[in-house]
Length: 102
Image 1 (cartoon, rainbow, N blue to C red):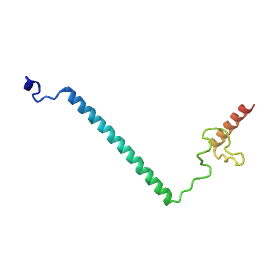
Image 2: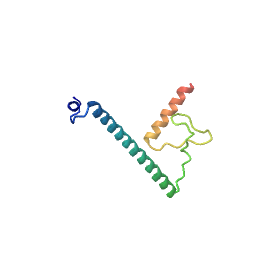
Image 3: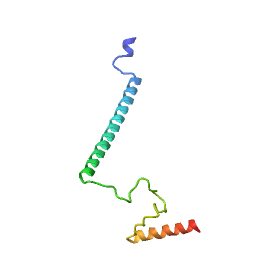
Image 4: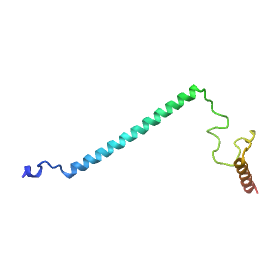
């Protein structure tokens, strides 16, 4: 009776567990690949910045507000808009400021 039950066929449960394990291993492999790629890219970019003697521009600051119509510091002049798109954005910002004020 025991020989008839396990005559070369794997139980469905064992096959299902095997598939789940393979999917998990595949997921871990993809995650490790993405982590490695990100790590190597960050290392390469940092080396390129050191090689080119990169300095962060004054206008790029982590503390400045990202999406506002406010000027970051009143003492500093706003950059001049050079092109049609810049002029249009300046007009929109000044209209938005006027709506908020009055």
